[in-house]
Length: 305
View 1 (tube, rainbow, N blue to C red):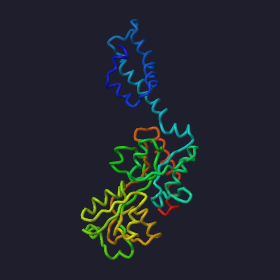
View 2: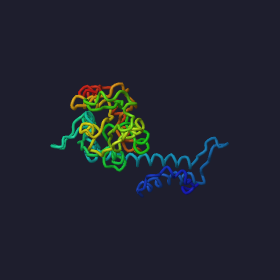
View 3: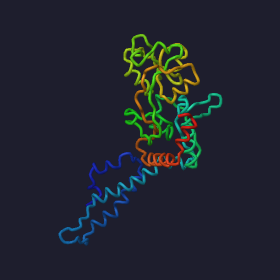
View 4: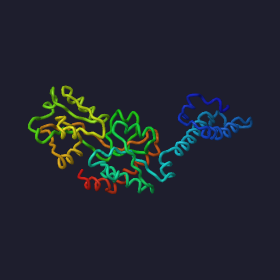
């Protein structure tokens, strides 16, 4: 039986390996076994007690070769070789990631996580500015190796991978303190003439359209945020996570809408390249180790989460 007898279906396993070197390696690995099994003096035990299936063996070798190629192409190898971990972050989700425009530096819960990950990898960390509408595209296109925290959603899962979750959020509506008496519960928001502000490309945008179909949805583009529209008087309500909301209540004149229960409890995790299982495995195991050592709980306490 020759190498050419491996079916097209079998060779689908090699999809994504486009360089000639990888394919040549596979052919070289398969050829000795092919030559051996083609030899006329091979004697099988009576009754074919042992069947040598070259096709199965070839597929196994092919799988090992592809695993080696995948390892070589993993973001993990690139990070270790370059000495730099590239992290996509929006810099606009307090207290997760906050950018200081004066120094172009970042601080926050996410930032501490990424600096710890880089330290354990033995590399430097580079924060790559992005926004919510292009966050997924950036990791898919290889502009960065990983992102800061993002809510896990079916839409994002179609294009990108996620790490293990290490924190969850719930979504709640807020308004200006002086308008707090105007709204009581979600139904009071879902009224014609009520302006609900949200940021383009975020999970919040999809939620407000679902929750408040009768309201006037005002969409702004990053770096603008919904709460800024409310503070400026251009909108009545915005929604955000309980995490950011508590920070905004302390810092600005906003208040949670009374009797509006928290909705959409959502796990939060890091975005990763969907097909890079080597890198995903590393990050997932790193999260488990850090959770066991109390790192995430200490970081939550530091940032009031």
